Length: 363
Image 1 (cartoon, helix red, strand yellow):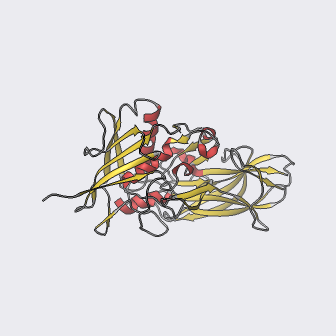
Image 2 (tube, rainbow, N blue to C red):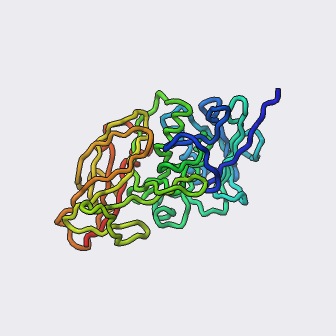
Image 3 (cartoon, rainbow, N blue to C red):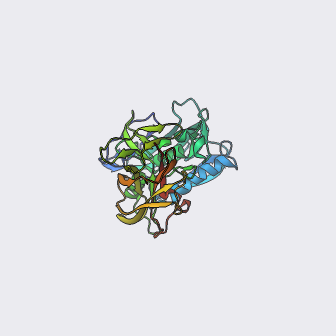
């Protein structure tokens, strides 16, 4: 008996919204009341040897694959290299560069309508887009630079490969990908994020060998874009007395807020649990720093605890008093770090994602 194969495509900022779980991840497609996924816990892919030769672009794609491997579900992606012949509908899962398909990147997929499992998934990146593999934050769009971060888009498209659809309800990589990014110490990295991790765990089950993974981001969800993508903006700083957002001293390349010495402010950041334990209780600290590199060497302003479930990113504020000793014109950074001091073994980036910041200038 012939089995039907259904073809779909999902594009970055050019797709459609698939209904699913409320206020959480959604599947890329449903079939006979089931979420479409791979029949096993691994998707084997191959990358074009022309588009991803040995060097920086291959390293960037490999880095993204590794982060999907290190999340706490049973699902993983394995990537082989130097594919000499790529194309749609050939029964192979492939990655390559192309153009003229109407989006910065696109995932085409097929699935068996009887088993509700994928039979092929292909990812293409538009070679006319100003992508860059760099981790230098100031070179990338979200932090005032001229390049779209390649790894965030790759993370989004590989999320489709895993079985995730576009999501608009929370801050997440399956929304506007280039503003789902983590920055600290002048560097910016792509990461799957709590909502996507929650989705792949629900689809494929939890991985017994997983570690913890926590994060703090200076981004938040602000709405829904066309196609069901979550829209993201930078987190903010508020006056603690009035609740009003403080005025900006500078908005480019990054927001810097005006504050007064001795003023109580509320620092807004997004906290995420992307690891094996849910909920997880973690120690956190707010710091005052002389630069945008939040570390344990900075001045501790507050200690607090975060009990975070692995479901929805936690956008919250902490009240901090600006020291009266700061002189007018002082430029500083307020930031928070989670799992500080380190109490949990984490998955990747040497806990890089555990801290982030907002700039301030004293009136």
